[in-house]
Structures are given as C-alpha cells and as structure tokens.
Length: 319
Figure 1 (tube, one colour):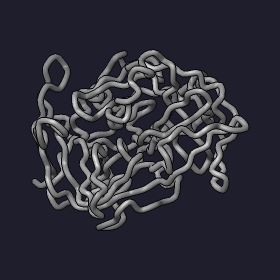
Figure 2: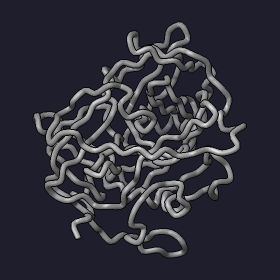
Figure 3: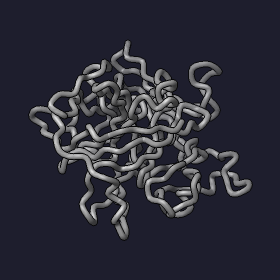
C-alpha cells in the first residue's frame, strides 16, 4: 500500500504534564544534510516476569513507533512499531486491515511518532509492504525538525529464531482509547502509556501455529500484552529485535502473547526511501542488511537466489 499525507496541521513539542504536542512542522529535514549516522540501540529485558507494565514515555526514544492516522481533524493511534534503519520500520500488518480502503484512496494521513526527551519525532508512512504473514515493512519520510548531526535511532534486527524458555520483552504503546481523539488548538492529543510485557517463550512454530489464525512463523510467550501494543518489538536477552507482537489473549493474567518471527521480514520490500540514493528503490530488508544500513546477524541463514532470500534455515543461538 502506498500512502500520502498532508501534515501541515501537525505540530511538535511534547509536554509530558499535559500530554500535548506543540511546535511547528518542517520540510524534509534531510534535504540539506551532507551526511547522517545511525545510532544502534539495544534493550534487554529488565526482569524475568512483567505483565503489561507501564514505563516512562521516553524510555525507548526514537526506536519505538506509535502508528496512527489523522482524519477529519481527529487523530488516533492504532498500534506500535520499531525503527530498524533510517526511515524503515517493522510493525504488524493486521493493524492496517480495517483501513486499507482509506489508505489506498489516500483519504487519511498515516503517521508514525516517537516521543523523546527532546520532543516528538514524526514520520510520514509512505509505503506499507506485507511480508506474506502478519509482518509489515513500513517506509517513512521524516517530517519533524531534526538538528544537524542528530543520529537516526534504530534497533538491531536479528535473524535468530527464539528458544523455548528464554526470556523476551514486548514493548508497545497502549492507547487509553482506540476511538479518534479530536485535535484542539492545533495540537495533537495522545492518551495512553508505553508498556512492556516480559516472560518466557513457551512455544515456537517455525512454519506456523495453524492454518487459520497464525499460519506463519511465530512464537508464544507467557506474559500479558494489551491492545495498542500490536506491532511493537520483541527484544531478546541481547537486546535485539527477534519479533513483533501479533496477537494477545488478555482473558488470562499471563496471556499468552504471540509474536511473528522477525527473520521473515528480510524478504519485505522497502519502497520510496527517505534518503534517496543510499540503496536501490525498491530494495528489501535483506538488501539493506548487506549494505550495512540495517544492523543484523547470520545472513547466511538464508538461501539466496537471484540476490534475494528464498528460504531460511532456523538457528536459535544455542550452539
């Protein structure tokens, strides 16, 4: 899906006391940049067990994406995501499913936000690419101001399959309401919490759990996650992204929560890139990893044909 947005209404300074965003929108901040740098960030689970635990809004900086829409002077957050390169992120494809018609006819603006100690970072989502499962690669153009020399924060994307009994951490933004929130005084109102869920992997299905709900590579974790966290990253004990939240079952205090395996994203398309000329358009996540634009590991786990991965040999790091 390709998207288009008029973001002249979005303004950009975050006040944590009132939870309002104020400021001014800028043109593409990369237009005058001679160079840029990536800042790799890793986040390890900080407990053995946590269910839907609230953490400070700014804890994950620009790596955690709050994904939402702007339509008819209202704004709503529909899910979460994670930044893996400059203008490239991962999320769950299903968060867009109810809005595909509006996205395709460009009647809504599709945005990704990150809340940092320096304010709000906002991106236009310009392309959404399904990876033939519940993973989606999103291409983004930054539309919020960016100081010269400011690095682009992103996470390490692992091709590893998780192991049963290892501890992992889900991260996402749980909106207080999935209903549209009216804007006021040219401000973007957001209500909700950044949350984490930490637990042990109980099952891994390399070829899918079933043929209906989760017919794709995924794994289950004994912890609770809540609505709005869908699409958020799953971190392992090395602080690497190994999945994104796909489904949660909140009728039990321990979940389970189910994640799509991140390795399946390496075949996903990156189109309409933010920083032109760094890689071909379109490319894949695998292409960006080979160019050093995505930090990753074990690209040799993929069988390559015509320069692209066609199959995957699972590895869990136990050897």
